[in-house]
Length: 112
Image (spheres, rainbow, N blue to C red):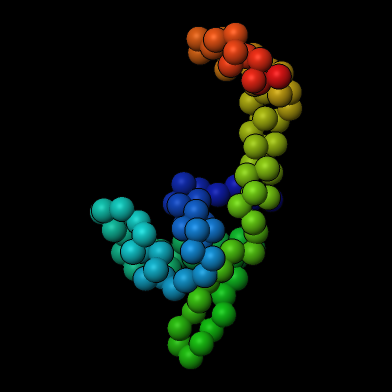
């Protein structure tokens, strides 16, 4: 599965939240400064070409919806992140995190 850019992920987060919408629905949920319609339209076309979203055409209006569940993307992204930065080891990730943070004994127990 391909990873998303920050802009693509922002659009996907919105589509996961609303389940289906037109370009204007996506733009309405982005904070100021609002991107141009063409910018979001381009991102949506890229996401569609990557297989992340699909659309239904009703007349000239396109309704976009996610093809991949948020949980599935999160799981695959995390596995890829773990593999790239921590040799696929959750123990190394935990070790790196605990070395950089002052965790209490209770927090360490919760990690287990």
